[in-house]
Amino acid sequence: MVCGFSSNDRDNTVYTRIEHPNETKTREEFHQLTEKAVCTATAKYNFTGVDGIIAAVLVLIWLSISSFPPANRIDSRQLFAMSLPPPPPALKAVTLTHVRYQRGDQLGHFLAWISLVPVFISLGGFVSHFLFRRELHTLLFALGLCLSHIISDTIKTAVQQSRPSTCHLLETCDSHGWPSSHSQYMFFFATYFSLVQWRRSRRINPDDVETGFRWGLCALTWFLAVLTMQSRVYLGYHTVGQVFAGMTLGILLGAIWFSLVDKVFRGYFPMIEDSLIGRMFYLKDTSHIPNVLKFEYDNARAARKGAGSKSS
Image 1 (cartoon, rainbow, N blue to C red):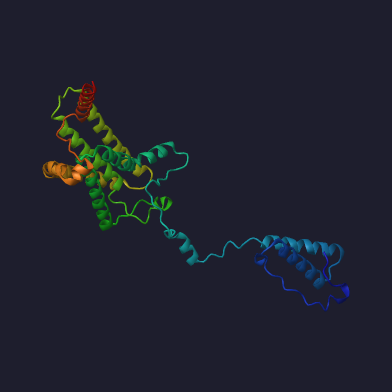
Image 2 (cartoon, rainbow, N blue to C red; image 1 turned 90 degrees about the horizontal axis):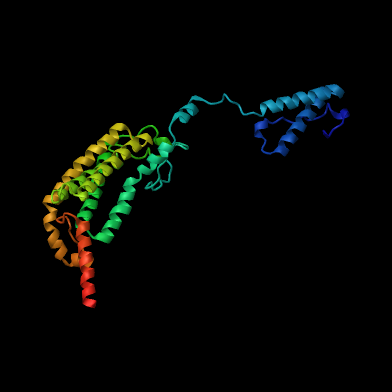
């Protein structure tokens, strides 16, 4: 280390002010600061030999200790700001399939997939079923689910009940939680689907295999509805009261909508089938047929036999 002055001019030296180590930005600046501190102390107190070495070591120890940032310089305003929840991000993601769960939680992973059942029903069920079957009853079923979702969002906006405290981790604090839309959707679906199957089962033999299959599907929809309700609480998106409110709303709206379709809209199905749009898109109603699968199977066989007889 070269201090840049001799022992003869120590008394006339203009001593360099020692900057606080926290103000250094690079390692090179810190080394230069250390050299200045040692040289200044040596020049001021005329340290030589062992005394100079001891002084240099003491200065280095002081610099090392003081280089740590002060830990007790947080005032009350900073503490209050740190206790506040973080503000919502400026950008918001489309959370159609964005469901979070604790890493390593197998049950949470399973329930996260269960929580996506409404998405699978909407995109994989109704869209594909209507494209390939063109059922008017299915179209009104999907319309009822959309209307019930709008009603649920309207109630959420009016009530404005917050989600659980875990919403900070899930980034859902900017939305409301009462009632649960997932719970409302699934119980609307289970209620309407069960009433449709109950209406069709009255036209077929109760001992038929088709009847058992129908009621098995109904049980599956209710089981999925309960699991979806449980998943929203387990994953921290809703409270117990919010999912039960969604369940009640879904059952009520599903029963009301089925009554409207069965007693009011169903009377317009023949007119829609005979309309220009109905003939263009092959819209049809099969709600009066007890067993649609058997009906299609018998007609497909009859058409094949008729085609075979014509070719011969």
